[in-house]
Amino acid sequence: MLSGYELFFSLLIVAAASTVIGTVGFGFSLVAVPVLLIYLEPQQVVVVANSLIALLMIMVLARTWENLKFKSSLGLVLGGMVATPIGVLALNSASPASLRITIAIVIIFLGLFSLKDVQLPFSRSKVAGPVFGFLTSLAVTTIAIGGPLGAIYAISQRWKPDMIRAALALFFLASDLVAFPLYVAAGLVEKETLFNIGLLIPGLGVGFCLARVLIKRINESVFRYVVVAVIIVAGSVTMIREIGRF
Image (cartoon, rainbow, N blue to C red; front, side, top):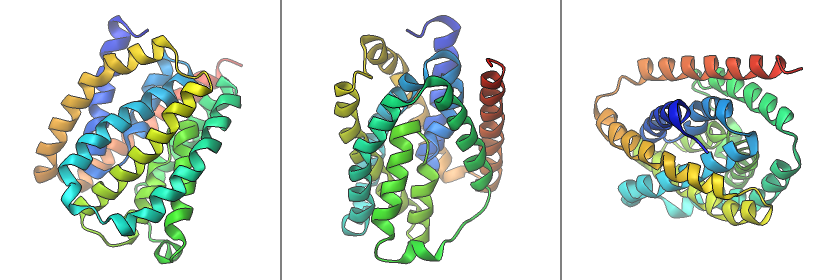
């Protein structure tokens, strides 16, 4: 169970990650997971991160509910729910070492990828919602990272920022609500996991409050570069530490 300086730094990173996802609608795990991997086993990190995201998404959805385009978001949500059981099975069967390396690679790649305003023609087609939802949820459920994929779809719909936040909040919440009972059934949720989730909840509140302030004042360009710098450094440290184990 997290305690002492481990708990202190974990709370700080959860607050920072909550600020990011509350501001731009995704990116919690990209920021939080590299640090949590230093203190917790990979499977526990995935469960803890996704559980915290679900709690945060309830707050985000409550704030942006009136901006939600439910019908337009349905394909994304349904595709995600279909992929969730597959992701849980993959998480349960993967080795900790392979998970750490995979997470580190994905973190660095998506961190660099997020510097670009990507527009994919396919994302405007009728089947794009379920496809993006499936791939995003598969990645999120397995390694807790994949939000930028869902964000690419939402941004491509040319929705307003609050519409994007609402759609992604509904998507992540639905996927995580399906995933958690499956995590329990697979034996991935222990008492220590629940304690760690509870200990980190205050960080969510701090980050959520900061996000509400930053949304109106943020310089998006500067904010993006700072976040990406943190992501790449943290991901690189995770990879170096794991390579050093061999």
